[in-house]
Amino acid sequence: MPLIVTGTVGIDSIETPTSRVEKVLGGSSVYFAASASFFTKVRLVAAAGEDFHEDYHNLLARFPNIDIEGLEIRQGSRTFAWGGKYFDNWNARETTFTELGVLAEHPPKAPAKYSDSKFIFLGNSHPSVQREFLHAFPERIFSVADTMNLWIENERQALAELMGDIDGLIINDEEAHLLTGIRNPISAGREIIDKMGPMFVVIKKGEHGCILVHDEGVAMLPAYPVETVVDPTGAGDSFAGGMMGYLAAAHSKDLNVSRASIQQALAHGTVIASFTIESFSLGRLAELTKEEVAQRYIEFQEMVKIA
Image (cartoon, rainbow, N blue to C red; front, side):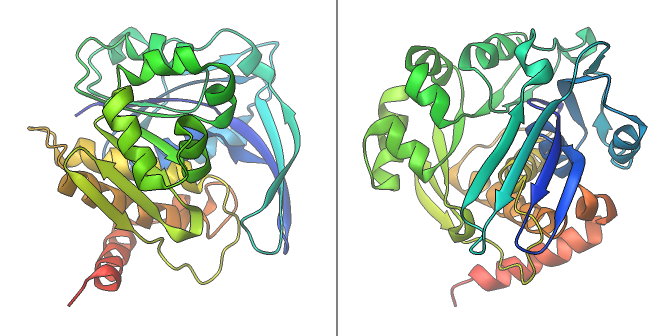
C-alpha cells in the first residue's frame, strides 16, 4: 500500500570518538525513506534549500523505491543543518550547532498524486504541522507519529489533538516519562494508550532495544548486536522506516495491526537500523542488498528465539 513520510532533510556534520565527517546527507525523512524502500515504495515529502547539491540527489537516486516528487528545492533558502558529537560510550550526544534553514519556513505540501496514500508516517515536527499533513490524506488507514521533548513540554494541547488521530506513537523512554510522569516504560505506554488515543506505543531504549505496548499486550525486542558502530545518527528513523515499510508491504491487501504483526515489523526495523549505524549517512544502506537484509533477519530470529 502507498506509504508516505514527511520530516526533515538535513546536512549533517558529525564527530565520533574515531572519525569526523562534514556536510553529509541526513534528516529524519531521508533515513526513514531509505530504510522503508527495502520493503516498499515510499513517497518523500520534505523541503531543502538551494545548497542541496547534485551529490545529495545522486545518493537518493541509489534508492529507486523512493519517490522524490514531493521533495521541494527552495531557491534562496538553506537546507536544515545539524552538527553532533558522540562520546566514548555512544549513548551520550552533544548538539554542536543547529541551523533551521527551510524548517523556519512554511511546511512542504504533498503533490496531488500522493492523495491516495494509505500508510502515513509523521516524522518529528510541530504537532499541529503533523496533524495538518495527516488530514490531507482522506484514504489513510494507518498512521504513526514521532515526537520529541520540545513538543511534549511546550505544545501539550496540540500534541494531545494529534494523538487522538493516530494509530501509533514512537518515542524514547525519557519522552514517555516526560509525557506521562510515569517512570516505568510499560506503565507509561499503557497510560498513553488508555488516555491519549493511539492503539500502540513503541518505546525506544537505544542499545537496549525497544518495548512495544499494544492494546493486546506487551512485547520486547533487543537491538541487533552490531560489532563495529561507526555512527548512530539516523538509527531511530531507520528503525521506524523499516517497521512502516514492512507493514505497508506485508499488508498490501489487508491491514493487520495485531501485537504480533507490529512485533514482526519492529524486528525488521531493528535489522535495518543495525546496518545504518555501520557507516556515516546513507553509506551502508546505499550498498545494502535485500539478500543481506533477509540473512540478518534470520540471524536476529535465531538470537531472540527461546527454545
